[in-house]
View 1 (cartoon, rainbow over the protein chains, first blue to last red):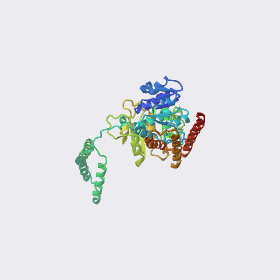
View 2: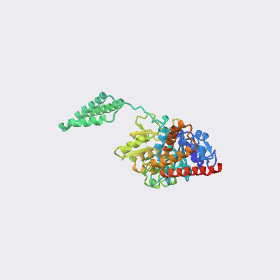
View 3: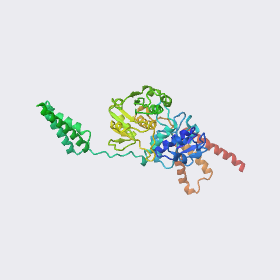
View 4: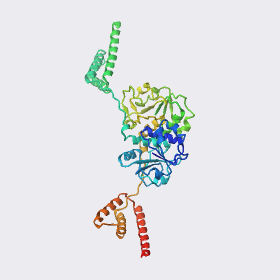
Length: 238
Length: 238
């Protein structure tokens, strides 16, 4: 990630935080306006100090990207541009696919990259944005590009959670049978010629959640409680 | 986008800005800590006032999501979670695919969503993040989810730029012939048995860029200039 003539130290810090969230640690700074190091950067980095400490500073963009055969310029301005324009998603795939190191250029907060900066890039990255309200700040542009990049990296695999397996069919059948018995007792299945369809509807509905064995046990407890309550109630009614 | 018990007005404003960048305008607030409206929200929204003006406020999460059959909770905490965990990308696809409105829940800045908040969601959204440095703030979480959502929307198609077509083959051949003549004159093709291979290498190299007609014309001008310089020089050497 190459920040070209960044203005505020705070934004450099925020960019560092955005990068480290997605596992990127190599930041390069081209002619930061207020010099380097900048005391405002650290607090804004919220702990991403290692990115700031390792940041390399260059006088010119050419020096900053000298070792990078693949250069992408982020910009929203498309006036007179005659380079391919890609989304962060497509750029990330190319960065991972291609041989050689890649540099992503981000311009100064106020004005963005100049035409001469864009000229050194092979392709342009533009975030597809609301045409009536495009207001991405530097750290937001960095985080979106870093986020897309991270999708291609092992560390960023989606988290896995072991969900409980659905209960065995016989467990579910046992619960359905218990309910069914209660419903028969309650004269639920009426009229009789609709009984088959109603049972099918119930089974579909109860199969859908994929309840675990534990959940089925809990529900059987609920049913038993309801049946018990009814049994307790009935003697009184008699 | 449902902000549950947000703390700072500034962060509500930043979230509004993040949303509008990607075409999302409907924000709901559940029990904002400092009341609503909040004077700190407007300046932080950087022009996304329409989102703040239309924001609806609810006392409880249940009321805020009453009309949304699809509820997603954003959280990084996976302790004791027994719900499916998806990435923002997968969630966005589901939001677009499914019938019914979707609500995405974001917790308070400091603590995130409580277990009871997460319980109402059908699925959990977790941004796959650097396991050694996870430090996404509220607006960043909102922007990543909004960005993924926008990919499924027409307004967010990647920008198109009409790149100039590569020059016609005869134009390129004309340029290569011009160069070749100059190289023959310069005794470049030596030793003779390598000439065919060298010519092929050159043609490959010159075909690769896909130069436009205009670019080829420019290069022919360069070659002509070089040839002219050489011609001018030669008489002097004689």
